[in-house]
Image (tube, rainbow, N blue to C red; front, top):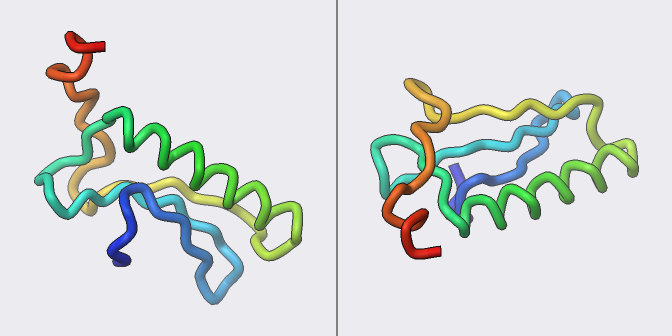
Length: 79
C-alpha cells in the first residue's frame, strides 16, 4: 500500500487499474468529505488512464474484510 490518502489509484502489471479504499488509521473505511474528494481525484486519474489506453479495466475494492462501513455521522451534523 502507498502512503497516499485513501482511496488510491494504482495500475498493476496486467494493465488493470485499482481504486483502493484502505485507510490505515481506521479499522474500517468510512466516507468522509476528504475521502469523497480523493475518490473524485482517483476516478479522474482512472478516466485519464483509460483514455490513454494504459488500463483495460478498473476495479474498486476496500480492505480485505470490508468495503465501506458508511459515512462519518459526526460530520453529517456539522455540515
